[in-house]
Image (cartoon, rainbow, N blue to C red; front, side, top):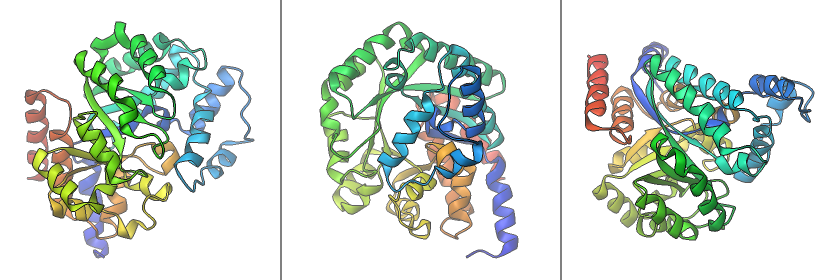
Length: 340
């Protein structure tokens, strides 16, 4: 464990370190205060008496427990302005965390299945993206499919996105992992690729290493979201390292959902040692207890990673982004200048 002075210095270093966040579900950044505000604005009764009561409900034992309350919270999002406010609330926090580029997932089916037009979702978020850019934060949007629903439903969702493809960088795959392997979505991912979209998928969070193989071999993804369980298969690790695939890892999420029983045993150090291009991200920060810097600090304060590891993780986040080479070079130069 680092001494107090070293921790203070490293905390300060992490605080403003230029970085990207590549694994953020915008619906998962809905803080209880904003949830209550939107519920009041939209005339919705929440089954919680207060912000404190809602926070107390964030006691999850697994991914499904979390998802149940996550979808309940998303119900307060009704108008274009709601999605704008949601986006801007996260973007301001990201900037405060030193984030210079963010690639955010949004779950259209969570909203369109409630009768909310796709246009409300994408137009609200897009307005927020444009305003964030004025503040110096670049943002790319990833349209995620809900894996507990059918592939036909995913095709329907992709069709809704067609008029807005110029606003999207890629598609993702999230929600309940176990029992819904990546191969279930082979055709819709192939269609998304035809449309020029990048591909990523949650794999190896709760699901087995075989799901990561499927994501690579059947979906042909460009980036692996989570990927923790790749460490159970040395051949898989070697393959991912050789291919240079980025893993978007989420420490506080892993702990909150009991993917990792003890943060002292988090696999990030092992991933870096193995040569995996791991990154640190916040996943669903309103529910999991912290934004991206909190996730870095959860590991630095335990002595699991040090200054050079932090720099490697930040550089990995830029190199793993779906950005053009010029923007990557500019952001990497920012990191180098910051490191001194």
